Structures are given as C-alpha cells and as structure tokens.
Length: 179
Ligand code: NI
Image 1 (cartoon, rainbow, N blue to C red):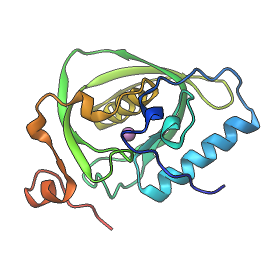
Image 2 (image 1 turned 180 degrees about the horizontal axis):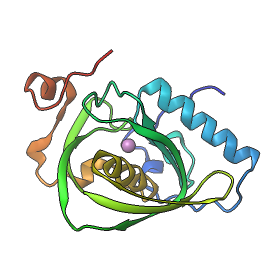
Image 3 (image 1 turned 30 degrees about the horizontal axis):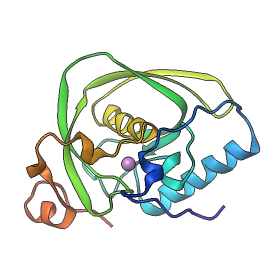
Image 4 (image 1 turned 30 degrees about the vertical axis):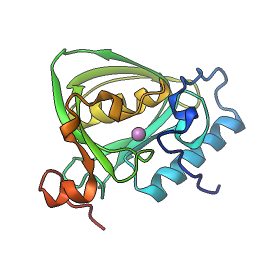
C-alpha cells in the first residue's frame, strides 16, 4: 500500500476525538494498519495514530529497534493497539522531549506518567494488557492523546521548552537525529 501523507497541526481532523473500532479482522482495518505501518516507517516515527493519516479510528501503533529521532532510547517491541485504555499506576511524572510527525521539526518538554497499564485489542480482537514504564509509557500516552484530538504542544507546561529540533540539537538539549 502507498504511504499516506501525515496531517499536520492545524488540520481539524487532528483535533477531533476518534471512534472506537467495532469490527475486527476486516479488510478495511488491515488496510488501515498497513498504511499506518508504511507511513510510520517512511517518516521514521516511533509511533503513529490513525487520525494522523486521516482516519478517525482508535488505532495506534508504535515500536522500534533503533530510532533515528530518539537514538538514546531503548528498543520497544512493535505493537498495534486498538481501542486502547490507559490506567495510571503511579502518579509520578517525568518530563521528556517529545516530537510528533504531525508537528514536524519541533520538540517540546512534556510531562508524562512514569508507569501505566494499558488494555487494548489486537487487530483480530484479542485482548491485550501490559504494564509499561519510561519512554515506552510516554509513547503510548502520546499516541493515545491523538485519539482524543490532543497534540503534544497542548501538554507543555513551560512554553520556554518548545523549540525547533535543529536549535535544540545545537543547544545540546536533544541528541542529533542519526541517519
Ligand atoms: Ni504524534
């Protein structure tokens, strides 16, 4: 399947809540997943949510072996989550630099919960549940926000910590994007 263009901040579709998937193992769902996978891979994202390619459906995916955009982060197994629900296991939050394929060239310092448990379905409708922490938990919180129409700049606490990638790299605040 062809890769899709990624909608950018300002597009109204990114600000709308997405709808729960009701039918699993359908051709439409598998096509959507393939498009998301191809697009995420081409753009070098660590995750993507269906609304980013124009589908208002509660589908996210994430995972990488080595990320060019987040070279210091440990691998996350590739995972597809449908209708994900997050339970916060620890009220403690950590700030970390986040970017988004829908906010190209920009990063912000965002607080996220350290430890969460997610419950979701796989594309065949099997229940998945897992407890995750750190960057893994951050990525899932970021992708689930997309399903509620929230982009990371809305989570910034101090606007001083919103910047362009090249400037943040020059300032030593984020690692260089590797090739
Ligand atoms: Ni994003």
